[in-house]
Length: 387
Image (cartoon, rainbow, N blue to C red; front, side, top):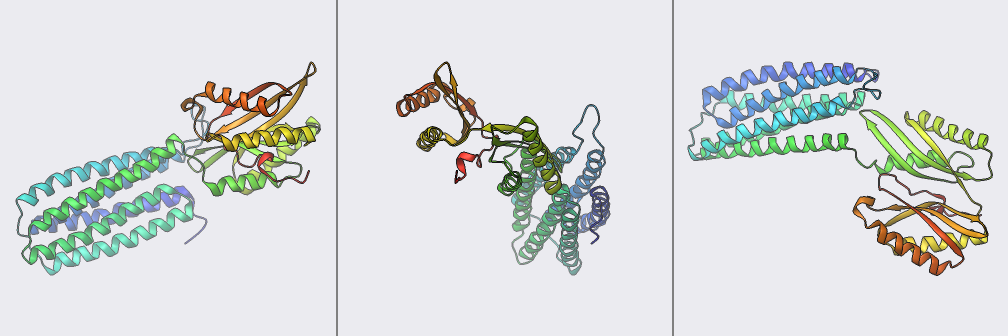
């Protein structure tokens, strides 16, 4: 398959192909259902019809998401595919509910289903055609990096699976168990609803925002730490807008560097992230102190305290500032939960008390707490140093 196919072209090809194939299959299976009286085949036919609807929504969402950013939507329209997926999933769930209602009726009032070579051939043909279409859509999705095509591919695959289950139910009816037809229809309905829930959940997660995966975080950290004079990385935040990602992060550099040099380093980090990951980034520079003997004493005390506190995930921006013959401590703690769900005043009191007990020469302690979305794992305090 051509690697030069654009997401828009791939989406249109997958969408129109799906509409054409599913249209033909729906007409064939609908006619067979009317002739045989099988609710399971009718359920399978309407499952196929729902695929046509979802493919139309796919085509519309592809058109919307392909629009460039404007004044009202500066980050583009790529999240439209997630909205479309939720709509597709809702329609799929409604279909599942309707199929379930009819299946329950047939479960208690079963009909004798005619089984013929034609019915078997139609169902086997459906299984083969829909699985081939599912694999083709999956390849298109991978080729064009278009996740919504994967959703459409799963619609095809569930249709193939439901056709296989229907085939089993028909043979059961043929050998004296007609109620199996209604039961299988009910199983298909549950399967359709569960599939709709799964697809909608993933899209809701994307719209609401999720924790970036470990592989991406590791690559960001590795790229940033690979730039000369970067001592640590923290506060990594990843924003997803469809296939477009925007990253903000803090890098730690020696406090004695000039402003011009620190800015040059941040620009290099930004350039490397764009070159290697194809993302836009905002890089904030944090100055860090030399690891003097006194600094190490404070650092070790804070490290021990963080390990002792279950809510502490890490810390950074540790600074000792002398003011009016006093030494003040500044430190940012990263929590394992959002600050709104933690008793901050109580936690701050515990930290203040324990640090002053171990470091009585500290005059004031200035603490800042950060939420879990500001990922901090590779601060200089977490990286062994030979300084």
